[in-house]
Each structure stands twice: as C-alpha cells, then as structure tokens.
Length: 61
Image (cartoon, rainbow, N blue to C red; front, side, top):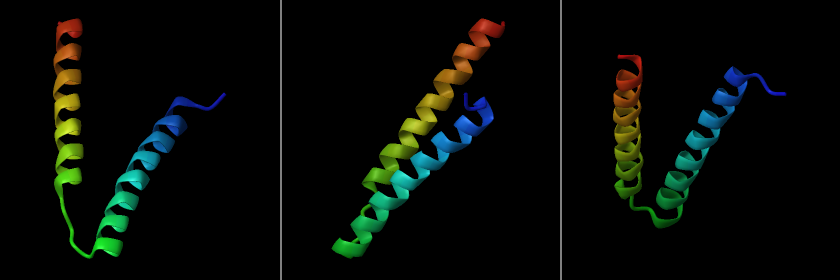
C-alpha cells in the first residue's frame, strides 16, 4: 500500500504535469498563449480551498 504522503505528492505532481502539458501544447503549436484554461484551474482551486476551509470550520467548531 502506498503511504498517504507519497500518494498526495504523486497526485499533485500529476495535476501539475497535465496543466503544464496543456499550456505547452497551446503555446508550442498555436504560438498564442491563452490563459483561459489557467484561469479555470485557478478558480477551481480557489473555490475548492474555500469550501474545504468552511467544511473544516463547521466540523471543527
């Protein structure tokens, strides 16, 4: 069984690799950087962090 910390590192590494690959393909083949995808990822991360913080606050008191 994989330790939780190693699994967390691997998941984060995979997410960063997917995002960087999509940006590399976009700029490399198209030549025009469009940061709409990055904005969507940032918005999703911000909303997820906010929801997790609120859920932890509700559970923890």
